[in-house]
Image (cartoon, rainbow, N blue to C red):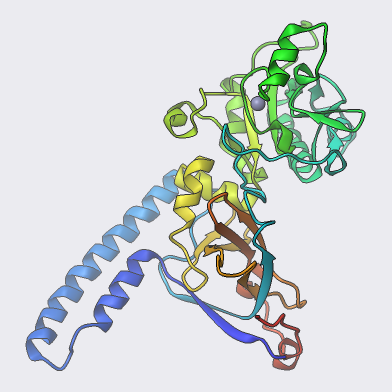
Length: 378
Ligand SMILES: [Zn+2]
């Protein structure tokens, strides 16, 4: 069955407003013509001004920072649409942007988590960070990106002092929030922490295998200073989004996260989502509402520093059925291009890599695209 051809127009909201406004004017009326000309001149002035302001702003920022999809011109992206059927029950607070707080918990199975040990070395085999224990474990994807980030940090600064103090903690195929949460009859503190289900230092997310806490280890002094993200370590806060990490509990967002500021707790959300959070100064709690404004027809478009382009949009769960059908651009290989995360309130968040449709390469022949299989909507 041939795929339905989808078209996504990537405008900035500014352009959408202007284009829609101009479409709705009755141009046969002569007053409207005159008024239209004046209005057009005024609009052109403001657009030129705002474009110039945006450009100046971008120029003063880190030159490697990403900009939203070509906001100065309309760009049409053409692809076949594939429909993905998702089980509503399985799609609750799950995926890379799932929330772990006092009301929601995400718990990874022991089989999904790997030890940190093999990720402590850079490509040359040099140890670029240390850990409090090889029982510290996490999601493979998270550790791979952590390894790249600390390798680059170490290459930039010459420092090999980052120590991963906490992530998830795996012993005998059981996963704990930290080593302090392992029930131990000898320790009243551990027993109390285990009983109320909180990690000993009061932070969430570690059972997910998507979060790490840093401290410092200065081998030459035998010292373990606190990690504050200051001085040379500011590089990590400035660059972590490029590796998919966010500082989860920043000091200026404590009223939103409900957790006291933590300078050493990083959460992995993927490069795509971290880019959106970085560009718009959002914490995870704010990301949901921000993304809910976007639809498959009018998605948020984002380009990363490496040149990849992504679209983001929101789909409400189909509460009348046990499944929800989510549209996605279909890749040239016939595969879906996106991943889906879910909140706990019935919202689905889709992120699709559309780089293959926007690259400079010549489009593939029509016959190849029309052969692709599309899952039928039910
Ligand atoms: Zn933590």
